[in-house]
Image (cartoon, rainbow, N blue to C red; front, side, top):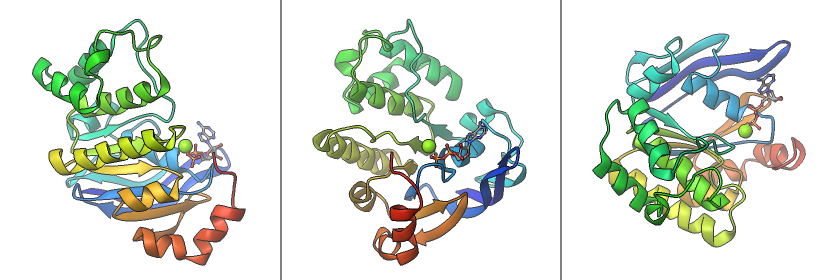
Length: 238
Ligand SMILES: Nc1ncnc2c1ncn2[C@@H]1O[C@H](COP(=O)(O)OP(=O)(O)O)[C@@H](O)[C@H]1O
Ligand SMILES: [Mg+2]
């Protein structure tokens, strides 16, 4: 169970995340949506330890992670991807996954990495250079594979589906659904596309100007007039 209690993040005079509270179990796929600049990535950074909240708490399975370093969150079972894929240069796909596995899971298990590569359709790319020889689709799958290699109980995915064409998006969405069911990994995903969120997520939380505007089923949330207004008038969609 991931629990956020009044999480607040400030950058100088700007409050990027304001008093955000919600809980989710590893049995959920939760979509985090909202206009550009709403604070979604900043909230991920606060959960995963890249920024320190100015107020509030981040709890995971009863442990207070708010002031714990990055690697300790991985050991507690929190994994994440980045909005801009960050493969390690000069390393192959397999080597990237090895580093992630050692960092997060604290051990090397080649059989498990083969499974993960097969699962994310990267088996044929294992020995290719991650920085120079992969297409965008493959880089996005590598991001998710790296996060999986840390053996998370809960995975934070930052726009891993953005920029993919319709078929690629559907295929990737099905993979994430599979991952959630087969490996019992909770998913918190930032995604703009309403159709994708509706098909993938049990629940949607809408952020607007750093605050929670709505929290509920996709059906209810996307019919909420305030949410519709924030989507059409509150900012530009990336
Ligand atoms: N490191 C930072 N320093 C200063 N301002 C930041 C920083 N990161 C994000 N911001 C600001 O915080 C707000 C939220 O940004 P972000 O979390 O990236 O939004 P989203 O992911 O929802 O598009 C924006 O106004 C952004 O410019
Ligand atoms: Mg973002």
